[in-house]
Length: 87
Image (cartoon, rainbow, N blue to C red; front, side, top):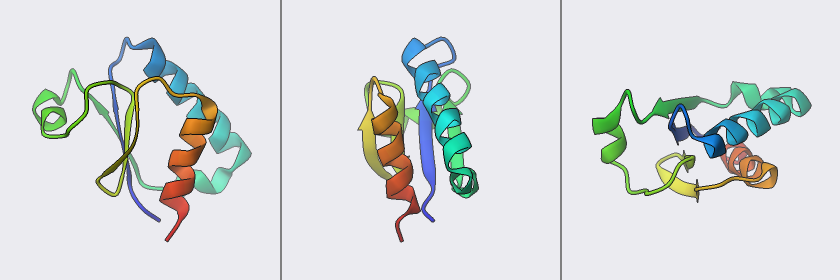
């Protein structure tokens, strides 16, 4: 499995929605909980976040490749996890 890196802001409504979708997907596909996932709070890790090329959160990277940026629908979050599941 590939690693997912997710950049968020604590008070961002779009980030909260993406995390909600993620939990729903975990409930439907428990194996996805085994995918390595690092959630980075921009407020706490600003220097690290600044080293990546994105402008909007939530922003998902799979093995260093940006796969989604900005407002996310459930299908977008699902595609991220599908991309991480592929070998």
